[in-house]
Amino acid sequence: MPDTPDIASIAALVADPTRATMLTVLMDGRAHTATELALEAGVTASTASSHLSRLTAGRLVSIARQGRHRYFRIPDPSIAAAIEGLMNIAPRAARTRPGPRDEKLRFARVCYDHLAGEAGVRLLDALRAREIISGADDGMRMTEGGAEWCDRVGIDRATLGATRRKVCRSCLDWSERRTHLAGSLGAAILDRLLALRYAHRERDTRVVTFSAAGETFLDRLELAR
Image 1 (cartoon, rainbow, N blue to C red):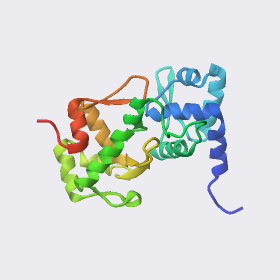
Image 2 (image 1 turned 120 degrees about the vertical axis):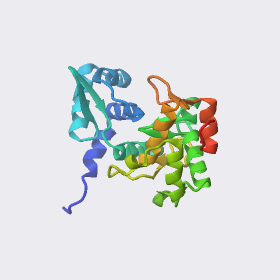
Image 3 (image 1 turned 60 degrees about the vertical axis):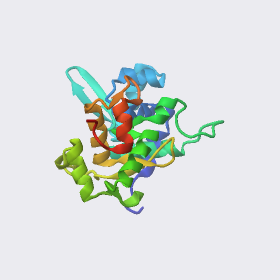
């Protein structure tokens, strides 16, 4: 057999409905306990533990320990991107409109660690229009003007390239069917919006809400004065 990636083993892990539900819950970018994931998936604690053991062994989920407690999370943005991709192509019975039903989720939500939904697409459109980002979806890059923009809005450029993660990466939006911005820059922008209180994450959900200043920022990409 040729030396090729073992896609089948990963597909088998995701194919189970319980494990798929758990992975979808973890797409909010937070760490969750086994009890929380069991409740979301509608299974017993022992069943959840068995599924989480398999996901951990397959490296789709990692464990963070704090005292006596164990928390589970998606360990890498590339795994989150793969799950989001599957969500884009997953069939939905008797539905012609893609994405979540909740209008708030459709407008703005967290996709692992960056902004998705209508707001995420608007943000990327504005970044391109102001030449902060250039290039097609498969070759996005931050421009020199983009580096200056990061300084103006308080994003630390040194941290953007501190890991092997791409600075700019396109991510096909589940509901909009257009791309939004992922990568270290996408994550840094969302972090900055949250720190400025231009945006707020609703508790126990992926929903992101915006203040008036945040709504303005999505289009103008400027801090309020």
